[in-house]
Image 1 (cartoon, rainbow, N blue to C red):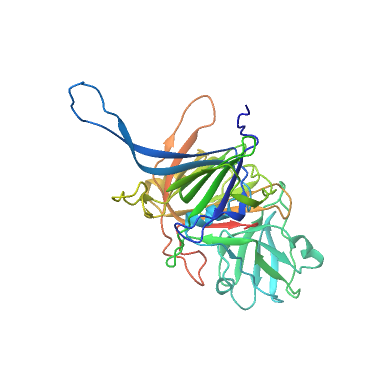
Image 2 (image 1 turned 120 degrees about the vertical axis):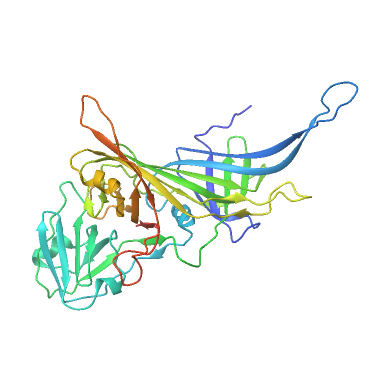
Length: 410
């Protein structure tokens, strides 16, 4: 008799049209994973009767629910449905400047530089601090600026400041006078927690065991939280947690023609940039953050063994990062309760056009400044809570949101 093996299991996900309409048949995406554990749970009610035989008269099953935990290594494009669900907005294509002939490129130091335009506005074009862009159209001394990831670190109407994020060593910004017909484009797509028109995504998830020809189909699943862990060295990971309303067992695969797994590169923490308080940090030794959805199953209701829906709460983003104690800047931000920002961009490798995942929190407050000790460099741990960036918005340097996410393969 064959036993199911994890190496042969397929975990497939698809977005439903609405609550109560499972996605089956064609469609769905096989997910890359470290582990996926989805389960059906039920409340149980034991009899409390007192009878002459002085023994329990049994128990019954009650309201059922489902839950799931998907543990992953982060990669571009693979979990785009889930990132969009976490922020309650579908990804939209990145903005571009259209062709400009009035932009001057200047080197301010190594991989850092500026792009200054004589007319028009980067802000009204829709560019934001934290965006990763790529240029086309530069010639002669500016050729090195073309088709290369450039992270925006500061922005005004006419001056875009940032740095290349290839390498190390990162490529220097190539100085070039205005005159070339050049275009700047935010790579891939972006999502952000919106002010209105929030999406409410439900998913169908199938655990398919081909070695024993068994399917477990989990329906009306919602993302309840996602936890991201970027160590100082190693693979960046994300753990997606789900709750749902039902499971159907079958002897045949429900997603009959799912899309194959993505093949984009895994995000290693050594390839990327972390910026705190507007400064790229060379002292951070690790970072974590969690997006929580505040979900609560409705019900129960009389006459049904499952809840009718799942209600949403606030989007909360919390986290922490660790850093070498090298000056008083970060401790000062905590001590003075100063509002600051955090931007994390993860690359798949060190090439010019590596796929990236970018996470921007335009307004955070540090909640702790905890030192350690020992025969080593001193490290401090800084917890933080993100909040709506009320200083952002249209034609401004930041998005008006608690978080935005950029995915070059979304």
